[in-house]
Image 1 (cartoon, rainbow, N blue to C red):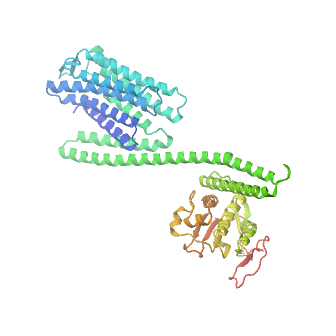
Image 2: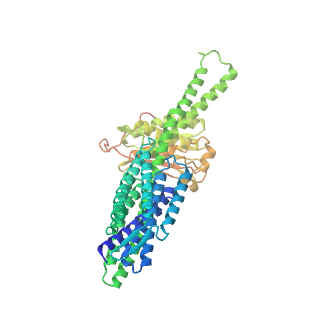
Image 3: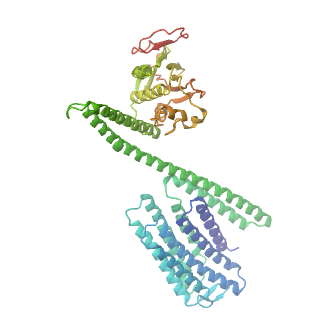
Length: 552
């Protein structure tokens, strides 16, 4: 087989492989169908040029030449339609205009098949086509469609509404198609039309690889993290092309059969490889969009909703003073209730903002050496009144030891407060026990309650944004579902972990655990007195080596 035939067949296979990868790997859209149609017509054009080598009759030669000219029209229209739809339809053409162009293209294509209009006669060897008056019409119409496509691309590039990514995509399409159209037109239209020389017509189709590859990269979205997709496609195309050439160059039929089978198997594997890479890219894109939407939501909640609720809270607080006259006693109760509702709303928004910020990693931490036991004791004392108001006992059990850590006192205190406050909220009667101990090079905090417990069905929702358990929603209707998300984000930012244990039985309660690494530079490895903030009192029958601190 002549070298030019091998090159043409290789270009045909590579075009089809790239086209199938893009078409099968992307969501269906108008630009996707346009691209696939372009690949089909390009492949048909290449196939006709490749088949010239095997023509044996005049009738076969006439049909090859005619179909080749008709496929050129298909390439031009598919390119124009792709320019119209890709990356999104921003051009001001009415839809009927594209249908009108399609109708004209079909009519011109029908004229191509009239004997004597386009192809008068064909000389098989050396290959030469004697053309009629239709060649000028075909050449002019092809140039008109291509120029219209380029004008649409350039017009889109001038629009300020395009994103940087869309501009990069359009530039890539513009460069690839410009090179392919110019070089292909020179060898397959200009030279045959002007010089009646068909010696080099087999060279033009080779340049379609430039166009097909550039548009493929543009359609799969030209992102930096798409390099993985591009690399997978490039590797797959090169590997399939290599195996295809080996199949053609095989000396025996058995070798061709083995290489051909290997080519088919490799093609299937490569399709799955590229589709997997494309799926990963789509997931990353979806995650990036979700993160951007979450950032916008955080901004709106922080600067608009929270701000307005805060302003309303201040208004109610001012009305309770005498600065605006004496408020009737009958109205004070309503104003106080309004103040409480506004305060609850601000707290609600603040909890969601904290949880979302911790989850996205946007919280800023001021890490300093501290005594974790003292921080926990502060939170216990602060929540004592809430526990007593519900008739609950709140105990702090602290082993005698040092508890030095490196952390952000503000965020850690809020995380600990969240866990203890939840325990109080979801405990109807009984007690809440806060424990603190050392476990090797870590500090372990436990918050145990005798509340409603966490059933197995609620486990997947915990520590997720907006995740609220079935039972918790009944007890606390104001739950945001972002408290535990905040706790998890803060603890993990301190290189720790958080988990819980519960058998799901009401009254058996739940125990949450927090584990944080010890600050080795401050760890003196000796027993230390209990935090001075609370009074140490021996418990009844206390376990060995443990001091029970009862909050007074």
